[in-house]
Image 1 (tube, rainbow, N blue to C red):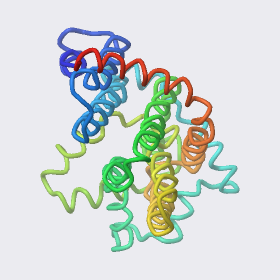
Image 2: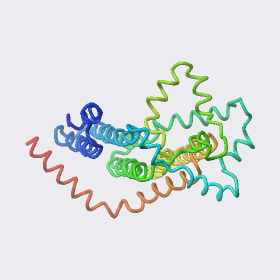
Image 3: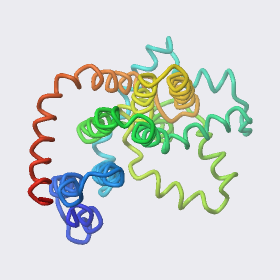
Amino acid sequence: MVAGVAAPLVRRRLRLPPPVVTATAATAPVAVCVALPRSRGRDVATCVLQMWAYIATYEMPADDPERQAQRVRIDYPVRIDRVIGLGELPGVRLQRALGREGVVRPAEQALVWTHWLWFLVPHGTVAYLLVRHPERFPAGAARMYGVFDLGLIGYWAIPTAPPWYAAQEGRAPAMRRMMVEHGEEFWKDGWGPLYGFLGGNPLAAMPSLHFATSVMAARLLAETGRVAGTVGWTYALTLGFGLVYLGEHYVVDLLAGLGLAEGVRRVGPRAGPALRAFSRGVQRLEAAAHP
């Protein structure tokens, strides 16, 4: 467990290869299940350690910015979104129709905050299941974090630029990035460090895990009741609109994220026997460690 926590912290100093870092960090959630008896606190620790491994793997492509810039794909989502937008990028159409240059209106600020609040939504949904519907927690957590982990494959295999980066490189029409405009105004001098901490890999847009995990959150909440499901879907759809309007994602990124979430939901039951067999193996180790 200690090795899994430490590997991402020392990877640069020790020049650890990315596969070693990911494999070592991925052992930590399993190790905590053996080291500690089952409790709600251990469930939380397992989820935290799973995300610790995810964050390390998510950020590592940006350790070498020059190589990442050489590999990044910029043009294909522009071409696809132009087809979707009938000759124009949907995000450009929306900004031109609804925005006003140099002003971030209250409704646009609300979309920015919807974007920022995403950091709480997937994990808040899993926490809600743990507290209010514990019988749904194991499967719900597996589906949510399965979406996170599978999305990493796209980020490593096909690093794809978001619209604002493509515009910055002159490969797409100019777009405003209202998240930065409002962030600089709202957070003042704290915006730079905050964005540097949260934006660990700017070239990870395909699929949109913002949208994929929000859709999965909506699905999990809907399974618990109509009110929770309405809240989940309202947030997911608002976020999806905001991601395109704010210039953070292409429509095709969202479609890929939707496909990922729905794929995990539909294929997940088929993986159930293998996952349960793995779980029984961990439980046997736990029983041996706590006779």
